[in-house]
Length: 359
Ligand code: F0G
Image (cartoon, rainbow, N blue to C red; front, side, top):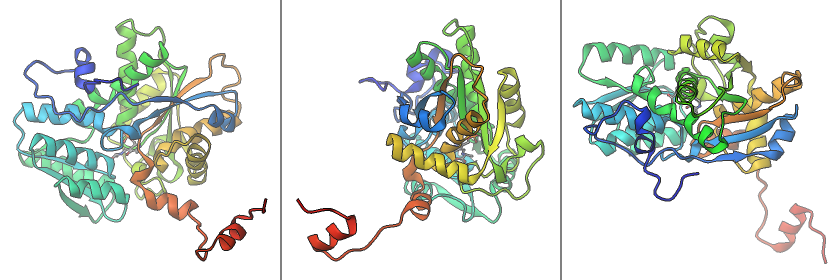
């Protein structure tokens, strides 16, 4: 969908965004990501669903965060910010670091020690951010960032910054622009809960603008070891292989619940095994490599299909938001699925290892 000459999402969707002619647009030409039909994965999920994959891993830093960050950093620059700061499970950090570099604004990143995928860490460092590991989890890091924002002249670029939500809502616009209507359902992972908030805002705004006639049912999924919204209370020590959504006390909790309830949707938990199965199916059946957290939406759809959730629905079109690229977290792929055999460098040995038969 990223047409030749795609101008980045602020210029594409400026009339829906809080920008003026005076806003210095800091862009890496993010957005315009493809909505890929996934027929084999749809069969795998079952229930007669028709899945589309919004491949957000194709944004400039490899995740949907770039949509929010082009807005947050452009506005920070407009307001003369001296530095920006975020807590992050990795992707926000990578994106903030890249856009801040482009804007010429210093960037400070707080990450939970030992819980950030390698690719994301490399990005933050390469873009020249000041990276600190907090001896605690994401929730601890975000608490520190909120305090710093109150006490020092630095701008917070986590999704508690409303410009982040504004930018991220454009994902919903793009899906509707491609389909010519809203999908019947949208499935996505939920971590700090900014993105489900943003997509729901986007769909409602497109409805008000007369661009769509109906909004989708929102289906959010948390990892079972890290599912505060599902259980209705914070999780003190969250755990999951999907480190991007290892969050025990989401900042946008209330607005996520509102998106769920207003859309007639749900927020449920999926196990790490279900996430890994979807992660593998996406890569091996459709050639679409996303990071583990991103597969939670597809895992959730499959679990719902098995319970007959879609049985009564005529329209089973589902947009699954694949929030981050698989290359962000190579260790997850290799540790789970990377058994490689070693062979001597001879045709006979290779043929034997592969079980090839002679002509
Ligand atoms: N998927 C990926 C790949 C993410 O990086 C995140 C969040 C989510 C899903 C969940 O989105 O927080 O808006 O509900 N990552 C944040 C970060 C927390 O710091 O990069 P959410």
